[in-house]
Image (tube, rainbow, N blue to C red):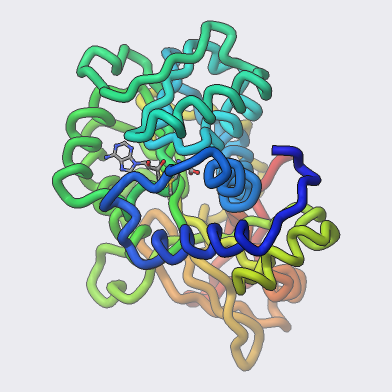
Length: 342
Ligand SMILES: C[S@@+](CC[C@H](N)C(=O)[O-])C[C@H]1O[C@@H](n2cnc3c(N)ncnc32)[C@H](O)[C@@H]1O
């Protein structure tokens, strides 16, 4: 699709119908990739937004020393293949063959085409696999899953966790940042802790603190920043208006696990308590409060402006890490640094 091609009323209606399916949880029932135009529109808008989430996740994983499995890349439920495209852009050294899997042949073909055009990696070829025979999971396979959870019942999810991921070398799974998706990813994490190390989002290898009592209402999610074009290109303004989507808010949940210990850069001199802020900071009378994920658990912590002015300012602006190293006093955060690319 020509990036500048006109998007007409019928196109917006088609996108809106797709969105209703996704939000209504009915997308898993049947194949909705009925024609090429639907794939083109999905790729131009929904997949682009999903790609912005992947970019945030992969940027973080790269910084944290995540290492792909060393074998082929498998994009499960690939759709138009945005996950594989983003992954190969960030990890071109992933190298091996790319396997595209989807129940829709048209989607796999489309993904193959787009990946071929992007072609920063995939030097060893792209293969479509409509049926995943057990042998497809070669040792070291890195599995990518993106926005597929709401289309999977528990049986299908079991098949992915025990039949596919347990054999993989590493996997990255990105989903919308909703309560339901986050909670299902947390359950997947718990099932696979005996096999893998957590590369993200957790700043620790312990049980998930959100599984503790009184944490039931919370979920693990982050926000990525859309690129400038989302606010300058009139077609994105039209997209936002036609579909009623706030472009500023791009919440995601993710899980990345690997067999090889991640090799992050040296920790900064002034180490504090490694933490991740879940969701956004909330205004509090003396500053802000955050839900802080740490090795010992998840804590609601207060940050007072008079004790940590810079941190409060940063968090109020919506900058939430991804990681922090807190200085704690009496349960409050009184200082700390953003643990980010140095
Ligand atoms: C919402 S789309 C996401 C596509 C792509 N991963 C992305 O992030 O843009 C979900 C995809 O999962 C595929 N899918 C759903 N159930 C599937 C199944 N049981 N086996 C294979 N693919 C499936 C659909 O055909 C669709 O392409």
